[in-house]
Amino acid sequence: MVPLSSCAFDRTSGLWTGEQTEGWRTVVDRIHEKGGRIVAQLWHAGRASARGLLSDKQPLSPSGVNDDLDRLQVWALLANGAYVRIAATPSRAMSLAEIQGAVNEFRLAAANAIRAGFDGVEIHGANGYLIHQFLSPTINLRTDDYGGDAEGRSRLLLEIVSAIWTAYRQYRHHSRARRANRQFRRSGCSRLWPPLSRQSRPPGADSSWRPLQLPKTVRDLRRFGFRVSRLPNA
Image 1 (cartoon, rainbow, N blue to C red):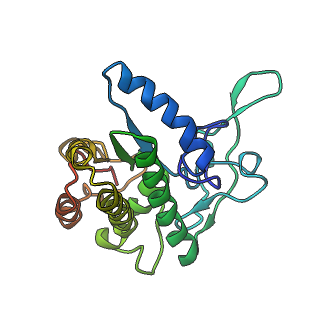
Image 2 (cartoon, one colour):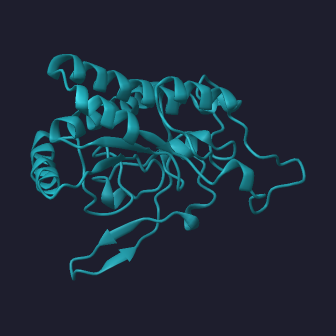
């Protein structure tokens, strides 16, 4: 999880503090000692959350769409040790400042992942979490630069990719980590699915529904050296 203000699962591990980064360094070092590799998956839950997991704050989303909260997976740890599903709290639309804050949170998490020694990072852009929410034409009803057509809805994803790439380039410049550069290029990919060729009509969609096409987004992602194997369902 990239920020403290995002949580779909109680006690989810994070990468936003120095203490967390040092804790992960211990885990990563042990894995490397055994000859393994490890990649950090970075994600923001967006509207898939509840006040009880956010210090009584309201979950954030692209547009404050809340007519399907019963479908969101939010889980909490009870005092008796049981891990149970809880009701999602209605979200509110993010301000432009909050969107930029989310981009910076991904950048910080990626920088911390690099400091902890991870072999790469994966941007989680599916399963109904924040990036997927912005890509969706039914959840993202914004009328500014982050909404509208497919290019506008993919703006957040591209800004996150750019921020992470910048963080990595700065690290490489200061550490001369050439070997890490090759590993990062191989490992870094945006996790988006289901495959475009297998997109199916979502429940309740009318006859005008068409599979989501994001050719420019794919070209932009590949320009950053990312591997894009799948695209999200509309």
